[in-house]
Length: 81
Image 1 (cartoon, rainbow, N blue to C red):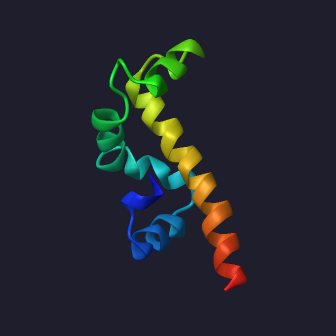
Image 2 (cartoon, rainbow, N blue to C red):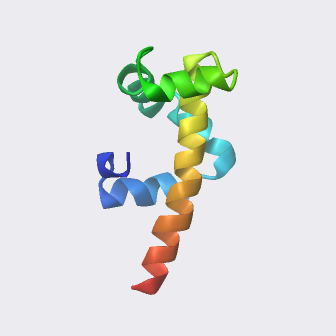
């Protein structure tokens, strides 16, 4: 997913607070639902197996986890430069 973003888009994404990630529900969240959560995909089936049944919830979780991942990896790596 990281490859979907340009460096400047990642910086913009990181300027948001965690509590503001709902702003990505439409747009990025829609893209996730349409492209990553096909009902035959392993990712979709993994969510179903842990009782997350709504694609909206799945995409929100993915966005939240992606934000944490980017926070840890992008911010830490940029400090090393």
